[in-house]
Image (tube, rainbow, N blue to C red; front, side, top):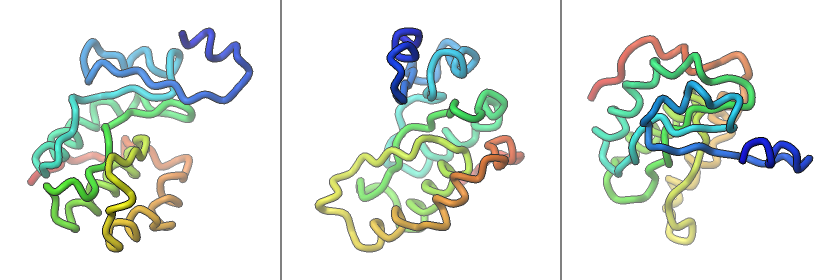
Length: 141
């Protein structure tokens, strides 16, 4: 499929997902723009910590045009405090994970919306030489 998408002549975002199984991140840069490195995230802080704790193992597989996907941002889904939502956003931005929002934007709070529109985080996200391998410690509760 990746060969056909590349031959289309258009910029297409292609993601591989096997929920962190079968070492798909080792094939990622040649096969797709993004690959999931974990199971599905849930709206619990322990789930986010678990996924982020494994991040260092995949850092060398990320690079320009190829991203390690930590799954969706948990915003306004009922399980996180505001500070945990901000930490989740920061972790995904530092890791250069695709920033996918899985919430109803018609019902989002002003606080959560302001966080998602934070230009400083997006500038950090776009810095080309700041890669996930900077995460040298394991995240803990």
